[in-house]
Length: 152
Image 1 (cartoon, one colour):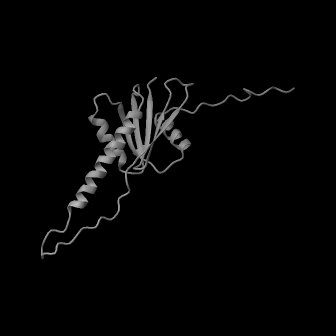
Image 2: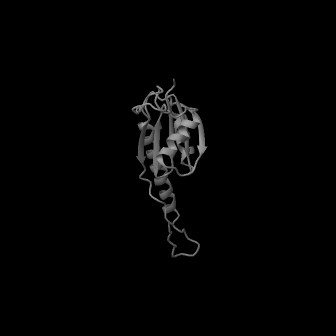
Image 3: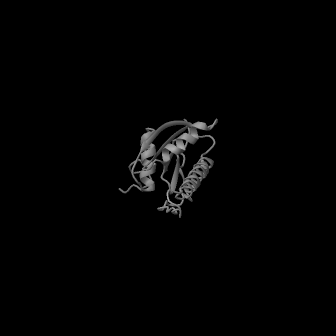
């Protein structure tokens, strides 16, 4: 069976859900926090001369810093991927999933991207269930009566 992984992410957190290759294996969930600063309104400065420059360079440097922070965050996520991952789905509420997809497409040894999907905020069990459902893998069910002593 192929090693399948799902990544739920927004610009603050990423949850990496590794499904086991064997049906009876353990699901491993890793967490990566971003250090991307929330963007605030950036003010410029007005020139003292009429029709002079208005200080737009500050906004450009903020955008460049954010782009650099996003790339660093996506690289940190990719470092957490298990090297034997064959198939990957990326999902989440923000546009960050497309940035990660773009970086993955540039990697030579990246897993096959099976989908990039929109999804709301979820609890960790909901994320695991979502990834299982995406890959068509059923949750293990306990047999009735197993583990209980039988009374007569």
